[in-house]
Length: 211
Image 1 (cartoon, rainbow, N blue to C red):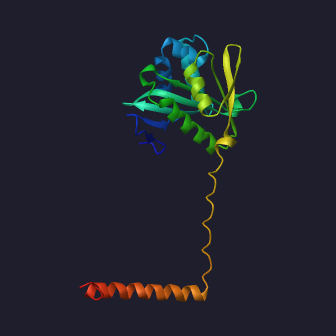
Image 2 (image 1 turned 45 degrees about the vertical axis):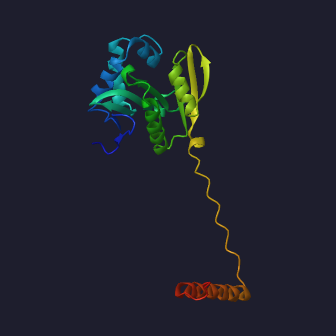
Image 3 (image 1 turned 90 degrees about the horizontal axis):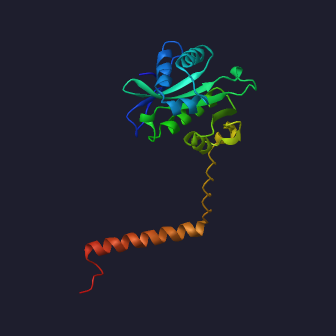
């Protein structure tokens, strides 16, 4: 198994990063399996099969990171992290697609978390996401992970500030130092402890019991 592979405890599949060249057909075939409305949501329009083939090939050669969700060896969901060099504003862009059979299982959230971790590892501070105006599930998922979305030209476009998501956990307050004990208090504690000890010994020996 790929060293970057993780197995979900709530799903029967696995999530791992695809190798860009060798596993190109896996991404392409996943995108081709998307139903008509899902394909429209993913690419913001009606796209034919030849476009998807060219798109997958480009992803394999331009440095795009593909994180895939597998079931029985078949890619059923994918998260894409496109390098900033491919964007006109030099901002890395992300995209998601999940086949209908794998929806409502938390696949999108798992892919989103893994993708954000990958973006952190690359030192990115912001991510851009664009989704169709009718893609309510993706807009809800993006908002869950901190995206600020705006509606324009039939699309919802927004960005995720990774610096806000990478804040360290608040440090725990140090435990208060124990109060200083004076010699008199220490001596009194020893006497009290000795009294308790001898009282226990006398009770165990039968002394001091009522007749």
